[in-house]
Image (cartoon, rainbow, N blue to C red; front, side, top):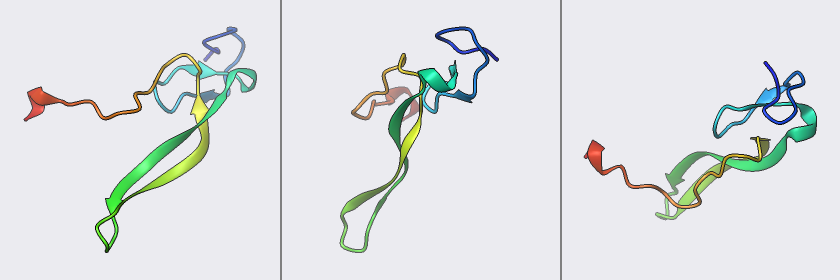
Length: 70
């Protein structure tokens, strides 16, 4: 697999879109693994820092409604 940016051998894939990237083109970005409510009813998230991001895709910062699945 080749890097999306430079076409050299890739070392990882973007956690958000799946594009392959080499070490030089990885952009670290946090990723939410799980969202839950604690015993007090507050929303909490388990977050992993520095996951692989290609730098090309733009993950949305707000949830997207999927009305066709209702």
